[in-house]
Image (cartoon, rainbow, N blue to C red):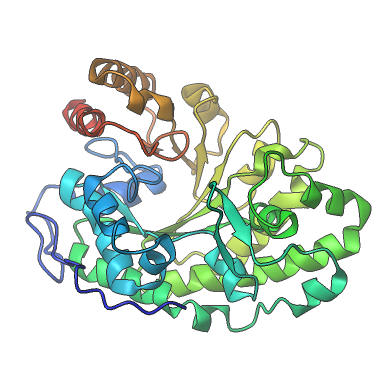
Length: 369
């Protein structure tokens, strides 16, 4: 792990907040209360809002930090990770703060380090090709090796307190396996799928270890104060509907079972052609869907206690602010009278997102009744 002296980490509370996070005035809901009520599919005073990748490249204050520190330094230094997490909360006062980190910290804690290629994309130190390499991956002690994650989350929690929900996250075992077997980013991920079909015992050995490691990483974040956690099955859409459960869904279900009912678990699955019934039975409190899903129709098919997160097209954040407002209102109107909706994008906030668009999105959600 890289050690950096975080001399430029501000770590001051968002406007109106102080360490310890004062509770909101009597009769008004805080962002945390609003978000958690929606997770329980209960009525809220308005739709709660946060954005995947809200902390990071879209903000000029983040880009200023990146001029001084590498991405890995920001992730691995608690004060800096906390500062990046707080930046969008100071600007936009979202209902939830999501920890600034990376799904591949779990792979690194297991013994497979990662970095970034000069031309872009992730590069693992090696690609998993054998049973011996799987055997060398260490799922024991992952929480101890990820203490920097827990410290960063606890720092943010101490500042947002009861005002803002605190979210932790991890990648799903299937999504992590793709990067680990492929050896990094790829134009087309194929090797994990090949492993699934060609050597099922080795695939299960790898996914079993990843399931244990992801569970420990999420427990660490819950222990540090996370109000909810999200599992990113970002590559779930690579799988055919008839194999989704065995290749991904069953491992997600094991993680949720192991976590118990301490905090809500959200599952985000991108591009899923089938398998939604599998996730609906996973024990998750909420499903997060991409922009290609008809949200109100999907909501009507969910179990009565399950919340739904999403799902504005991220590309809207590159367009005119008037378009953002129109499409946000249209989505909110389509979900009127349907409790348990958490407004988010259908994937991460684009790096080139316009700040005025984020501001218009926030204002539109707050004004809508």
